[in-house]
Length: 385
Image 1 (cartoon, rainbow, N blue to C red):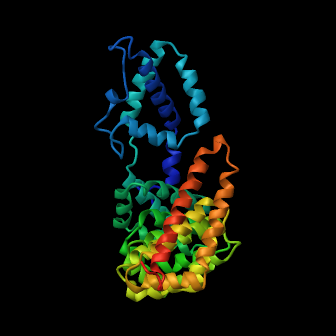
Image 2 (image 1 turned 180 degrees about the horizontal axis):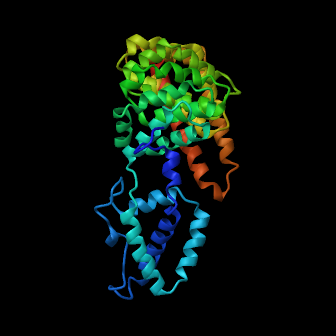
């Protein structure tokens, strides 16, 4: 990194020698103000009254600074220090309050946009250590949570830099990069234009569980409600990818949940392009792998499988009827539903009074099962409905 005003995230953190003191004082100020609020209005000093409109950086109030600082401090040390300071005499606390004002005036915290730029500059440094690379990616992961920050990441050229990290030799680096893209890039054409989808789909095939999960998370975010992204997904053998995940009993269950949820998403979106991709939803192997998930012992996976099939059966035109035919002839769907119903009813007999949530969930699942079965029967080619 250069000299002068340029800095890295490591230097940002190392320059915060007073951060712990700041947080402790803010916490004590808040607690002591609350304790004395009913005693004397002249002695009351709340966080709201201490707003500093002229503070540089990304904090509009002390509360915002407090939340940021707590997130970057050791909770155990904060609690211990706060208890110690609370025991101080009132004169000493007032002195600390005065010191706090002066500290805030002198402490210029970087804004979110500035922190993102610093992180991007760090990632662009080929000599950056792996630890600092992870730190920069983790910082971005937090910063892109708000939608306006995610949009800013694209504006400052950050997406291209993060996408480049998908090619890193370190799997944790790739995983963090995919996670950031999943959070920040939904329906963003720039990510597709930069070729991220193909690389993310390769990550889904990784032997690393976290890398595969974050890869599919990002893929789903990129193509959800995005017809261009879905075209690329199908062109990159996306059907085979989902089929492999869903049909392999040794696949991580979280990955299977993401995959079957994506099947349902694609079915909802396919109503607009049903003629083009109708064969996807008549794929016997794929539908059979989804139906087989209804026998899982995981109720959430059962539910996601049923919802995906429901979405397929609600497709427009002849596609849903063709899918119902495949479900009937290839997947023995009725028999699978009956087995699932029996499993749920047996499960209900095992619940105690303390399992009210699980019992209600199982009851709701059987109601969903009945609904899906009714739709299925009305869609069968020989149905009289």
